[in-house]
Image (cartoon, rainbow, N blue to C red):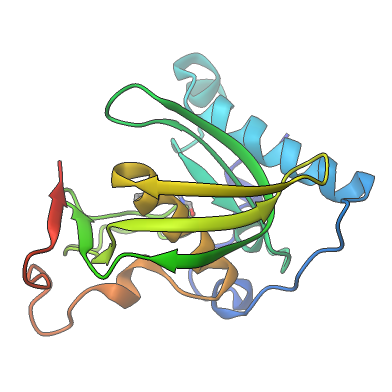
Length: 183
Ligand SMILES: OCN(O)CCCc1ccccc1
Ligand code: NI
């Protein structure tokens, strides 16, 4: 099972490397990896298991956070309306996005960052993502709100981008005009 010791931290080259596309349909190794990643997320959100194994709660994880430079992500979370998003995806790509921006009022964190980094993280308010799932099916996801934020955070990890790279250096709490705040 994946635990915190498997998650690389700031300074590890995987976090600033562009990850490689994976061959689809996925081979067993990559399917098992995606399953291990989503199991980690579920474990991290289970109070008993998280406490037993000292897991930080995560809503998503990208293979580069395990030191594996592959374009694989898993997400498992409920949005603010209680909709469940549970996906294991290969080669996810943002194929279109809104001009409008959005950001979480709480800012963002990262399992690979052992410190609080203050500031708003402006992202696209709405995105369309194309990806391949575990069975090799091509998916097209239209995302907004909290889900759009999380998917962008994960896809950034495949391109060597950390959430704080988006924070305004001069004024961390400045935001693009008419950006939508997500509470
Ligand atoms: O890469 C995933 N990860 O570091 C876990 C935290 C994910 C996350 C946290 C805040 C806003 C969006 C996404
Ligand atoms: Ni992260």
